[in-house]
Length: 473
Image (cartoon, rainbow, N blue to C red; front, side, top):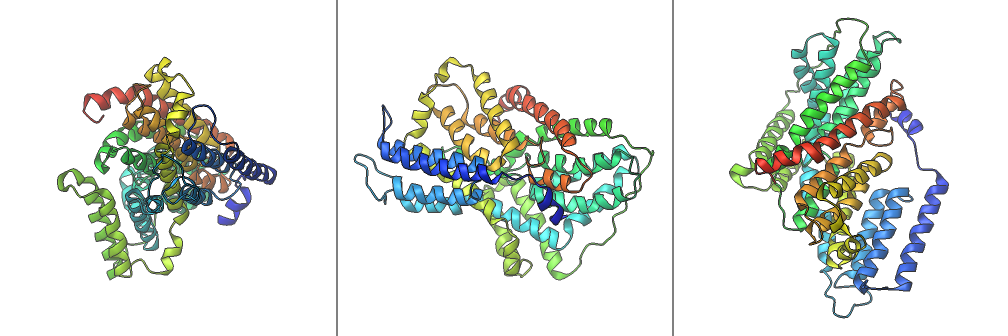
């Protein structure tokens, strides 16, 4: 599957990457040479050079996304920190160590814990064994089995990487599809339901998807702390409704030829000492996350617990470190650093001032931010989109120009990013499903577009009044 994925995954054309790199360099150098204009200050001008170059590089993927992120950190240190190569009069830059510290931000430690748990779950086949146990109550009805696969995938993806969850569940589903008739549309439905559910499930927790972490990091920098349970209270109802909608759509579009389907997943739970340590650590971590309001220990600290325990007990070894998605952590860290720089230099105020946002109603503004995030995330990385849109959206919400709750802005943008799943390149789970050969672009486009629109309507128009009524906002 990996070779097929590499062969079929859509890539940015090389000329586009070349043009992107050239444009980023020209923008960066040009803005620095020209300097501030109008009411743009020197610090904001330097940050604008960094911000614009990052936008171009993230969109065109001229260099790896994570490489752009660490370049942002270095550029901020050299241009707008307290150790800037050329100091700025009447401007006290943020200590350079704080820009470096974004690579160890508490949100990243939370994500690191999730990554380690996910890798260990795959190593000891906990994910597949759990799927086998949880799928049994759904019986033999094809529609019920699709529902079961989607529920299990969504739940797993709340606490594991969407990509890892999809890979594990595809290993469960592919043997089943091999036994179906080539004309049975259920083959497509079974494959398609996995990435869709993984993408939706990623909304549910802070560790479910990088855009969630980026939004939480930016909100934390504004003094707005959202704990694990609060995020779940905001997101899980959305997950349930959108997942149900996706299920109804998939079973309608891809009906089974037979009235029953036999899904048997072999294997037994590993009972070795190391596996038992993993099971206990996994359970304790999740319980710790969902009971955060009771004990008050930040979720990032709880998330770091499995890193220490599993590494110290050799459940997670030195060789396993290579399997961690370090590039994702760097990507998120760069986005957090970008938000710091935009805020510290006053670039956010300047960007907000370019448009008369006060003339727009709150709902129009929120819709605009969400729509931009959804469309951008459909064609580029949702993490890159969140890195670009979240800082602007939260800064806009904290300004006096508009009446938009910063928490609501961050949540809406993060969820809109994760709801984008209409193309094979939109998310890694989509690419994995596409690489199987059973799912075509049109399948992803139809289901992904409907799911995205339904999710956006819920997040924008249905959920906020309810969130406010129950005190979540």
